[in-house]
Image (tube, rainbow, N blue to C red; front, side):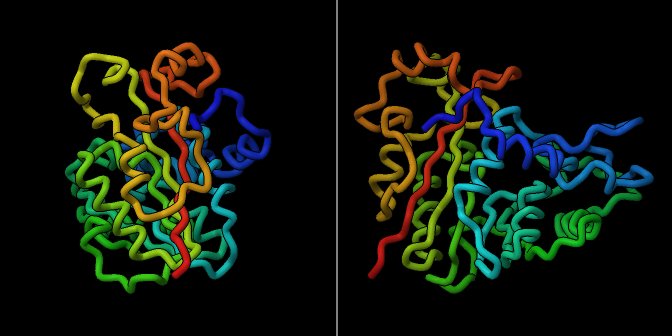
Length: 271
């Protein structure tokens, strides 16, 4: 499915509790890149340290509630970096791994570098977690290159991650998810759908990435799609660009960029 403009009440309450997706509104706020310098960084909340899209108003709570989390679950947040989502997973009682090769120099996602700021990915991440007393293990590698035991994870999340890589690497990431998940474990995915890229626009890619062929991704995953509407997932035969455009007013389209969110859950087969 594509995330809708209408936000379920439960999602709105979750966003309010956590300050998602942009952090809490505070007096004398500084830019997200400089919040480690603030006298009280914690006041921004866990979602106040990473740039986010307006589409996350739907994506984050959808992923959280759709995952049906239980205390003790082992979960991975792919590309989580300084996102507050990992904090909410830890708060739910999960054993959380954040698999992200980001570096502080990449200011698309993170804070700027200054002498008085933590200046490595691990230092920044540890400082961020300390503000919210969250227990999360950072692994600074791509998911397909991690050294984690296969078949031991209950949930793997990738919130607007796959569109930042090419189709081949996206397939490798999803294949790694399959290997890492337990039978019955689930991959919870949100994938950006850009309206300035084919089949809608003319650009082959934009600053953020590409339009992933979700149909091919699911077909080649070796997992079952247990949540998702083929008519609203690019690459499925049922996907009709003209129909999607005709329904665009019903979608949670970002006011800052022509993008919406495709929502998919894949389940690893038993045996």
